[in-house]
Image (cartoon, rainbow, N blue to C red; front, side, top):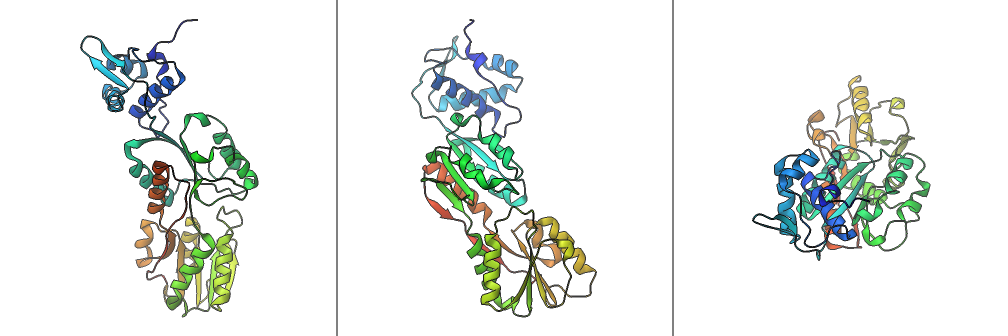
Amino acid sequence: MKELKVIDLISVDPYSSTSKYLQIANAVLKEIEKGNIKAGDNMPSINELSIELDIARDTVERGYKYLRKLGVIDAVPRRGYFIENTDFRRPLHVFLLFNKLSTPKKTIYDAFVNTLGEQASIDFYVYNNDFHLFKRMLGNNKEHYTHFVIIPHFVEGGDNAHDIINTIAKDKLVLLDRTPPGVTGDYASVLIDFENDIYQALNDAIEQLIKYHTINIIFPHNSYYPREILKGFTLFCQDATFQYKIINDVNDVEIRKGEVYINLIEDDLVTLIEKINTTNYIIGEEVGIISYNETPIKKVVLRGITTISSDFGEMGIMAANAVLSQSIRKQKVPFRLTLRPSL
């Protein structure tokens, strides 16, 4: 069997969110760990690897500079690049798995990536709240990653999510947003306290809420949002003696004077505003709107929509710091009320 050259062991994935120069470096480091690349081995020239991988010469050069910074490779005149040192601490390689793409998730991602910087490479995947896709994605290639950072939310079928998550070494695991029942061991987490957060946020808005008699929450049947939100909502309304209603379909909403409407889903917010616009009620005086999760557009729509929201930027920073510090702490994400004219 023909012995593979170093150039044959290096590859890049054009669909990966990890920069190609980091993929080159990680490929070399992985093959060193496997024993396929040894001290003294010659590296392909920058031109050779650029042609082989069909990528820019500058990208290869950046990858080589990164490896030199780690002390793994060096260069000498007429010999080119070669493996100088195989005793190194491998950089962090993170498997980042989100349940969906959205503005809050982008905020988490940006903060996470910016905090890690060049200290880690990240492979980013989305499973669209589909448990079977979640299971398949986590079923392969676990040995390639130093950390798994996961947001576990499912529309259906997630009752056995803990079985999948428990196959991951706990010192590699960081859970975001929530913990599925049944996950065991000591691991890092950055969690939202869904029940207490909505209770406290509504309590903070009590001065604005007292001009209304009823609070409605639009909570679709097929929502992946935890039902702890409904527990906190119901408990607040009972403690503060508000009438309340849980509505499972925004199309069933009837706009009535003196009522507040809390929406969770972005599309429901559009439908809700359209329904209110068919009435003569004044938003913020005769009817109120509270929207779950802060996004930039809510600052300007209707002169500003009141939101109750986790600090998603801080969540990303906290998750990145858990990776960098190898922490197994369980932390709570800050949650806040932002009052605007819609209430």
